[in-house]
Length: 130
Image (cartoon, rainbow, N blue to C red; front, side, top):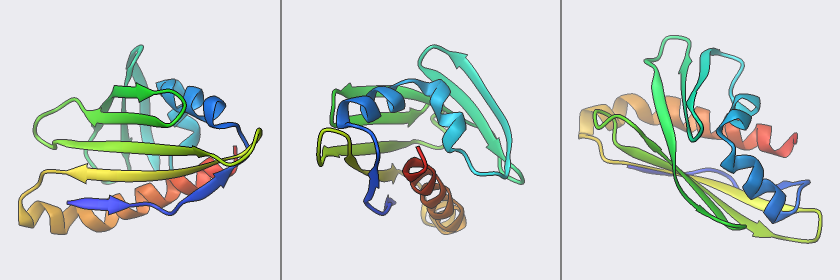
């Protein structure tokens, strides 16, 4: 299952945005209001939960400064990645787009498509507020 977020403009340079997204602590600022848990479990990993959803643990898988940050699920039960592609627009602005890629059976994909789409939309919206 592949989902693509909207491409948005962020008032940070590409390098600054990549650095921001490389620090897992900063994802707490991007989370939806419905978050019920956010905890950094190690330098490159965090766990979060949204109300009514199971906990999800993510870790940094790849950082390509200043254009890409890839987070991946720690658990093999829900194998997926969340990739932020970053493009420099000017000295102080960058374009960002989030991509979700998961390997789920058809039933699971149907169940999580809507909540994951809303989650990506919220992360993207909150990126524009930085």
